[in-house]
Figure (cartoon, rainbow, N blue to C red):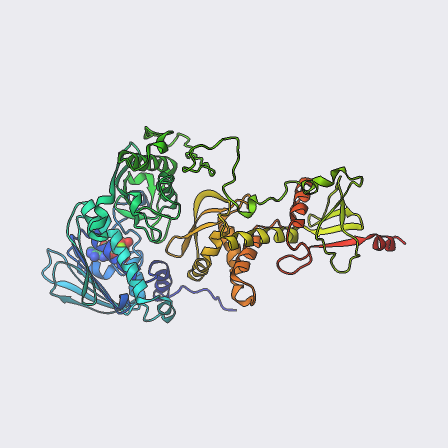
Length: 614
Ligand code: ADP
Ligand code: MG
């Protein structure tokens, strides 16, 4: 047998790498504009045709490239921005991976024209699908002009994957908003075909926000400002009256780099907790300045996530600062400041243990009721979790206690599979036996009751979830430290398609862009769940959804959630857990079959037992 391992040709390797960096026209815009910024440009023009499918052109007045550098710039891992591994911890430029140009050139036709101030003639390079077609001297302006034509022309699958022009163009605008906010001293221009979409002049940050989001935002911007030994925070938040239900403008920047940060996002949202309905979101434009040694910009291939080494301290500082700003402008009614009227900005060192602030909400508090007696406990939610399932199944039958028989009757029990017409009766001093960590065995009047533990739990959860979804009740939710889950584009779409129902069931899963979602909470019924695994399990179920004809979307979701969270086989159960499980099972509408149609329980009657021992 000959050896079979060979190195991939560069063009193929680049195409594979491009899949990471260049997903759509907006990614090209981002990379080219960032390069222009790194090159010291003060003016950047972006010209788009057909939402970037036909043309993406970025022209800058930066420092340009020499003839050799122009050629080198398309090599993979070719960068002028870092030289040694240590430099990774002190990054002051937008790019540093040296992958963008190689990736773009692998999936499009590219024309580069560039010239340095000191050179009389510039260089023009033509590349298509990683192949250099020509390089000639040209006369051109100082700076760099990239034309990227027919993106993905050589990868039809990728081209097909692009969404509508409208959507793709919106993403391009979003990329420009990010850099334009991060660099308000740079002039930007965006043209879509012959239409001028943006024209931004050098301006202070506040002015830049107004240029981008309209004059109306001006009077609702509230200053945020704080400097500690760890971090400096500046920027603006918006007053609650302009909060939005969808697509709020929310931007974080760290040392002029846009970042997504679900955990710090929560720090802001929490500061608005009592002054904003939960479905509304404020806009914010927050800039952090921090020693680059205290962050890691390296954790995500497209670099929109940044890790703070002192994350909890930053969280605390941000939360307190935003709260203080809201308070200072009398936006927060003073009653909300009872506890922390004077917000102290903590200055902590990395060694200090920081506990996230716990905020307790009294769910029963009704501001319109002048007096609420503390002793009366009013339940604010009517979700199925608080529905009157007895904690203890004996409670169901407390009225029977005085009857001579110490046996209990389970109502509505239809015997399965002709297993005798006797009512199933379970004695009060019930004994439960777990068999092979799979079945629960318990004596009943007519014999032995055998229950499949997982199927029983599936049924219980299924009915609970379904009820939550159908009632759109505010399902009891457990908040967790937000966790981002990265998905494939197809899975992301699937989750988003069902997100309304999933959230009604008690989840808080939100779109987080770039094929990821953020999990902020999950149903309280799930004791300890790993968000990543939950989402995976959900997806596994949703993949079958369309083929389950006759099954409603709600049922599919409820089933997916139940399967994701039902106790597995192999789990040892204590006798209280078994008792609780059986109580809840018999409180279900249907306790004979699990939602997948399999039998949950069976009775081995006395006759059968006797027969066995004949
Ligand atoms: P990175 O930005 O990570 O270094 P790129 O592939 O984006 O990698 O760019 C490679 C190199 O090409 C850069 O390091 C820079 O030296 C050069 N370059 C790219 N774009 C420009 C530009 N607009 N002006 C000047 N030099 C540029
Ligand atoms: Mg770059």
